[in-house]
Length: 215
Image (cartoon, rainbow, N blue to C red; front, side):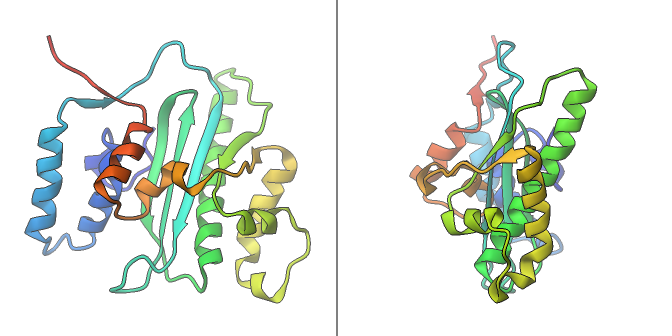
């Protein structure tokens, strides 16, 4: 149930951010960047998403926003991934409009992820699945999380007020919870920024992808 905007990543969430970056230059793509993606796919052609039959039917999510991530236009990037049990079922890597602060970029990411959780919850209910427990939306910024729980808006948060209200509403309704997660374990990082080889491999392993060898 991929929520990406580009067809090449329907089954390969690990290249979501790279394809999103290259897609910005679709009329004149950088040959080197495209070749790197193709070489990576050739070397990992047997990797596939794993959907175990014994997985639970509980949603969990990871979300992140990368502020001012593109030096060419200063736009931010939103990234999230949502699991059903151990299975990755939805993910996104998308460039957003210019944000006025890192808090705005991160709150946009949280609001977009919350919206996807709400939709998936409705879908599961239609299928007869119990979703009475809040979906944990893992985040690595404690100050942003505190704004979601604080009913008082300050001058510095007025420009993100709508996203705050939306997130807080679903926090109060019990649709989501906001457990803190260390930045080192933030899986959504793979959808928001370029990473070192070791970091990329560590996070891609967390996407429940399996090496399948045809017999």
